[in-house]
Length: 314
Image 1 (cartoon, rainbow, N blue to C red):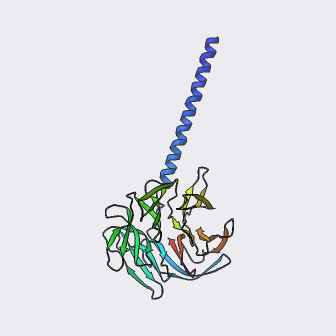
Image 2: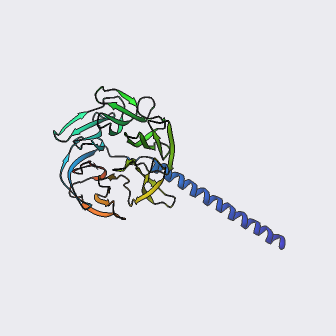
Image 3: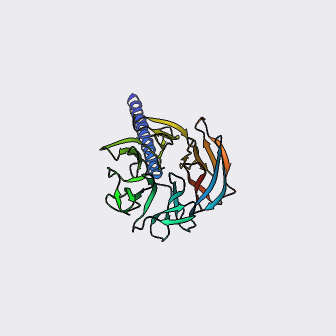
């Protein structure tokens, strides 16, 4: 009888161990699956448009009016970025059904000009060196999937970075040479300086959202998923390499922008939300449903605070 009881106890212990191992394995598979799914950029509908609105800001209250479709294209249009003097907007557009090129919408004349004419796609355009150049992520060239710079006067393109890590999104401070980028396959954010031989890992578990330079500072911001599952916009200081939580993100749209006054602005289900620079929580702003039939994702605000560009996914 004692032998039977001992055997039974051993079997019970073995069963518990097996169940623990199985449970741990299933949790690991679930975590890996979630990580793989979230590391992939969210697919954007083929029919997306960029709208430009007049913007009025008073005490962190935002009023949009006089909207205008500035892309007017039946395919992909995305990633608006304002010029330093607020007189133009860069964006990417697929207009031949093959790849995306970079375009510029000139606000005063309402003219659109094409800036790249390559056989491969370009993404994430930004003005550089006070608009004398533009930077972008290139799907071609060597190194592949990196950030390049186009000199607008000569038309020549050169490789910008001193890293061959594939880049998805990035932010660059052309005055200091600091760059913060989202690693395309590493699901991380990394820092480098294009003027110095310097590169450094910053953080893992970075959400695929474009890093940004914080207005009136040399700091950057990025979106991070914490170990407790919460998603936060956080700041990164290139001088001290410190990371500071700024604002949580509630919802599924991880795109946001900075207003020149230091407010953080984002849209969730066509509702505008503002995290005031002097506040500690999100403030509900204008309901944009009356202006759009599709869903708003990306947005950008001009340096003079008078214009806002929004991407509508239809």
